[in-house]
Length: 239
Image 1 (cartoon, rainbow, N blue to C red):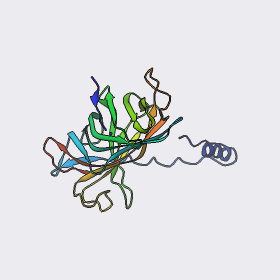
Image 2 (cartoon, rainbow, N blue to C red; image 1 turned 180 degrees about the vertical axis):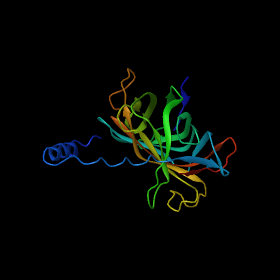
Image 3 (tube, helix red, strand yellow; image 1 turned 120 degrees about the vertical axis):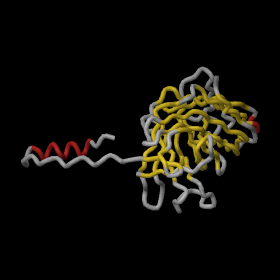
Image 4 (cartoon, helix red, strand yellow; image 1 turned 30 degrees about the vertical axis):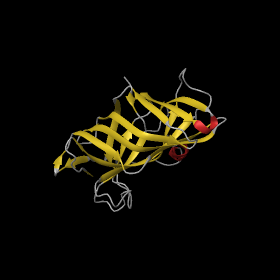
């Protein structure tokens, strides 16, 4: 039964250049491949495999341009997400998602439900960026299991839009991850590990319930605190 969600490349040019060079120069020894990134999730100094609970630090926001409507922005004041992780970052899944207090920029409230949970095919990767994140949480795409249903009450327009969204493209849904000791974490007043959605996209999927004003895609933004569940202990992402 759906869970309530009362809001949550190939280098062709380089390849051609290498082929041209091969006709005029002797073959060279191929460079050794770069080593794979190593990932370890720990809690209390020990490898951690189990559930991680994310709770919102600020409002979760979804927005998209609806035909004949314009920009629709939904903001939810409360959000929780539960994901399962393995200490080496593999075999992750999204198990639960619940958000509440969702209103839109047309003066109405929205109801969003999530079907087909859990969503498998996720992973955590230690992939630090100087002055930024410590790693990423990825949900693979395309992912035919993802089904997010949004019922948008556009009060000032006197209309309601019903829209279904999923992950139909090739780009994974990516959440940046920050350790609690990272000075670049999104909310420095919060001492815990954090995650951030920055303009990640969900795409409209075919459904007989879709109405004419549904945006073709919805952009998601939000910041979240991450702790073990149960227990509420801090997590550390490293090599």
